[in-house]
Length: 252
Image (cartoon, rainbow, N blue to C red):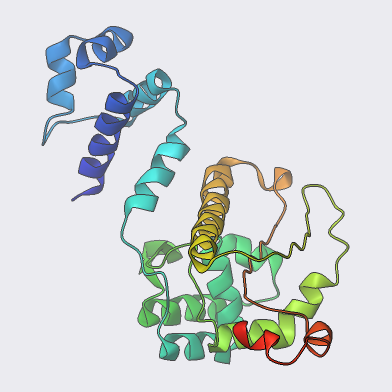
């Protein structure tokens, strides 16, 4: 399905979910119902100005519509072991990969980091060859992986995170604007744990969607945030040493 067809399908779905008929949309757009039907029919033409008007009727930002389109696109959620090894082996490549997952333009990367344009472009080319991005003219790119990419739990990138990044991340006070650190412990069934893991994944997806929606904001109004979500069947090592014989065996 083309991007245009996907957009039309998304608009139709939103009209249906809001209970809006073609006739009602036509009145809001000051068009005839037949014109709206032709516009939303396969092969119909819809200028961007008309998309903006439809978004107004639906009370949606175009950026939100675009984010929904991106969310519907099939995307790889995990890299192969070989891909992860290649990404983490070169610090410059890892840096550019993380920037790509944050949808930074090449100009933003060069403005923030002491990278030469040659090195940055070479990293983009390598990420294209690895299948992480699709490199386009003028050093633009499209992600071929999900923004909520899941690094392999025991893979090279998470090993790098545990050894080089985790202590730095958790060293902060988590007391700044919009920051949070909380630790909750409890016991419940494995089925409920799976449900909770799914809800946490949706929270990560919401974080990614908000990032997409805020791309239109000026750089001065944005701050970098990172979310680390962890759920594990675990007892603190010092407490495990105090457990009665046999009781700790039931825990992973």
